[in-house]
Length: 329
Image 1 (cartoon, rainbow, N blue to C red):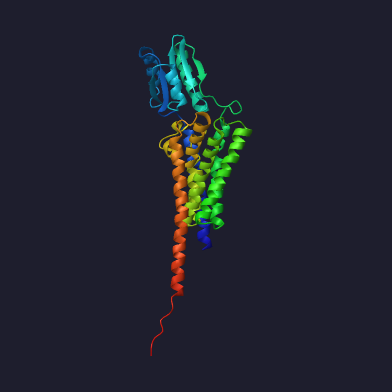
Image 2: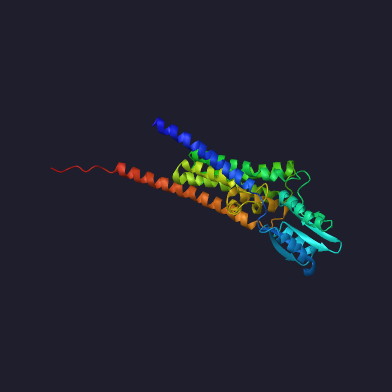
């Protein structure tokens, strides 16, 4: 038995290290624009050359055409595109949204400026939706993904290990998530000034992100036992965190990593928090639904696991209480 345990440790630990390095290092090493939504605004005759230059970056940009600068600005504020190149009589103008992703805003500025410099033109850069002055790099928002995931893991594990079941477990998970959301909003919004949207909407997004993870942990543990804690922890920490695109953007990650990350709690929570904090809730439906599904399925599994446990306990009690038959004669 001791030899088997030794072999398990020797094999599993390096394997987990290899998976972690792959999950974190591979997307980071392959960061590049892939069908990144970018707008082009102005008369068709004037924007043709700009589109042609952008299409030279094969597969990098997904071009969206707009009639004028106002339409392009609306598209950025609605999170349809990350930026837009506007062709004006005074020269090209680049509209960015550093609040959507400082990395993407910088990438667009470099790409468009270099192309314009080749033709001797100067590009005017306008940040339509900027990051707060207190957090110009958006570090606070991207750094919030890991603490929220950890809070959810701890809450779900605590509910499981303390033996809370059924409605008591559900109540504990919901109350803890709500408190985490309020505390996190107080820190990130009221104290740090890193979030600038509606305070209660931000608290709700932060709480929902926590509940999605904690409910998944407690729910799977209720169905399969303590092993469910490790399974969800692996999924969230080893895949969800590096696949979230919180520090960059999902469109900069290799496929299908970017898409998978948005269906996992860390990626969905980062996208939802950006939407409610800087874009008045634009494009918040998708990530909100993803987190809601995680929370609802997890809480449902908690209830189902408790019901199955009661049913098994009832059957066991009935079988032990059945009187033995006494032979006659």
